[in-house]
Structures are given as C-alpha cells and as structure tokens.
Length: 247
Image (cartoon, rainbow, N blue to C red; front, side, top):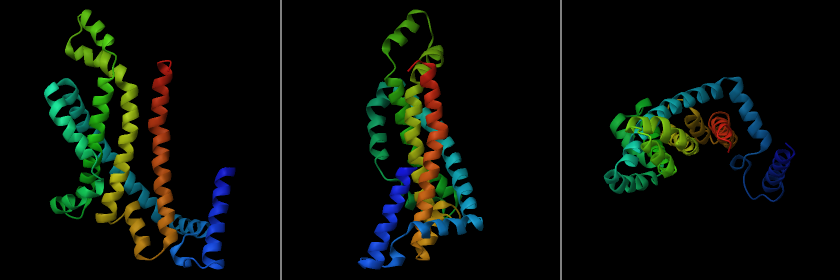
C-alpha cells in the first residue's frame, strides 16, 4: 500500500509540474490521480462501469470456454500424431503470433457489428494458445510414467485419463493462465471496434469525449479485472494442484 501511495504521489507531482509549472502538456491531455478517481466515481454512480464490466466478463467467459474445448481437441490431436505435430504445430505457432486486432476486419466482414464478431475475435485470439499449452504440457510428461502404465497393460484411453492428464495438469493450468490473458486482450480488441457496451466501448467513449481521465480509469479497471481473475481462479487452482503434488 505504501508503494502504491508513493506511485500516486509521484504521478500527481508529474501532472502538476507538467501542466501547471513547466507547461509541457495541456491538462486535458494528461490524466491526474484525482481526475481518474472522480471519473471512476461518476461511472460507478450511474452504473456505467458495472454494466460494462458485466458485459465484458460475460463475453470473455463464453469465448474462453469455446476456446478451451476447441483448443484442447487441437492440443490432443497435435500431441498424439507425429504428422500433425510436424505440420499443424508450426502453423499454429505462426498464427498465434498475430495480434488479435488483425482478426477484427475478418470478424466485421463475416459477422457484422455485433456480439458474434466479438466472440469470434476472442475465440480466434485464445484457441491456439490453449492448444499449444495442452500440447506442451502433454509433451513434457515424463516418459517413464507412460512406459510404466503401458507395461501394466493400460490402454490408450486409460493412459490419457489416469496417467497423462494428471501428470500434465500443472503445465496445463500454467498455460491456461496465459491463454486467459490472450482472451482478455482479444476481447478488448473486439469491443473497441464493434461493441455497443463493454469496457472496450467505454474506453473508446472516453476518447471520443476527449476525457483522458475516463480513458485512464477504464484502463485501470481492465488491468484490475484481468489480475483478479488470474489470481482468484487460475493461480488459486495452480497452487492447489502443486500443493497436492508436493511441489
């Protein structure tokens, strides 16, 4: 808390010096801590921020669930087939390097300006990350586990359910944390282009109104929500799994 207070104090000093004393920039072009707090209070009071956050979370949860299903199937396919591992995995690595905003024109042309286009950007922005995380986690399972299970007569289905998945689970959770961040960023790319409500839309509304304090406040909320979901959901699950395994 002390560190955060020092950051806020430094921010306020820089704002005061830059706008009032040295005249480096105009007050409307530089956010101030007090202005951001006032803007957040206004948006909380009229319900804009609550509504925007709820819509954004609903979209990203739906998109991430779809990404989990599709990405898991792709990851299993790549890890279980040498052919797809050689040919499909490099393609997924290449596509994964594309920023999510690159898919926005496709989404608008294919699905129009609506929920479907935002959902498409979320899914396409995080599915490949999920599949690569699954494949990497399965690939790093110690081979001795698989050989021991096969020696004891485990079939392919039993091998996956009782050996590979439990052993790969810590790596899977670590990969899903990264995939969640891709989904969250992809959501913002979609919302700033085609949403009528949401955190991304509220961010762009602040830009259109030349309200730099609203823009900064929404950015801080986006960071806060992303960090909270990571800590409460994924980091909590990861700690529980690692503790259960004595790691």
